[in-house]
Length: 234
Image (tube, rainbow, N blue to C red; front, side, top):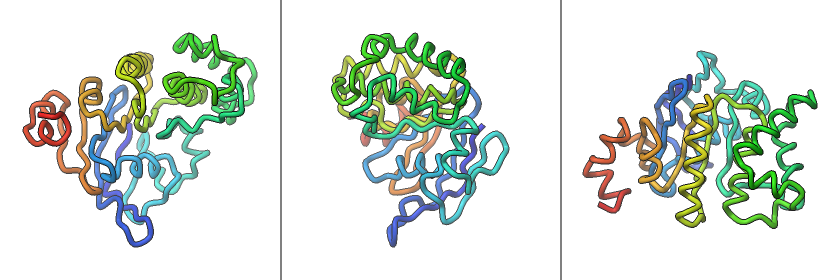
């Protein structure tokens, strides 16, 4: 479904990605784990068209999307839920969700997507007239994910969904991620909470200073001494 080959990205003189290669199959949850500055968010931003690579290729459904604009990426079925939520604080919950459907024109379709989001996140339905900026951190994360779902994606790029959340809310968010995946949405998950990421993903890639240092199925990575020492507190 998604293939990234030898991706290289720089910020000025700093090389953030130094030849990242990985793949994701239809229906999978694949995690990218690693320390701050490893290149995880840069990878997602490049796939979604926000950043342009200096070298490398990105293929989605066997189509080269390396130089495709962010709007076209969304239209092809790839949606990114950004780090830090980035909701519109002065808009209501409903207005935030409508922004996620900006590429759609049919009102009935938009309402169908809204109903689906409210089914997944009943709390958002309760808060639909509330301003986004007044929501709790967990509710804002739900809203950010719901806004992404409004575009009816086939592939969702999730960037640090557990950041800043209490442990009980982290559990809830990861349950929802699993539910979304079971509804047919493939997921590329960037997450510093390696334990949670590996518990939900089929496979994972460990990024270190812009390179893939390790990869494999999640179970084997959980038992890997290097991963245990660096990311799992073992």
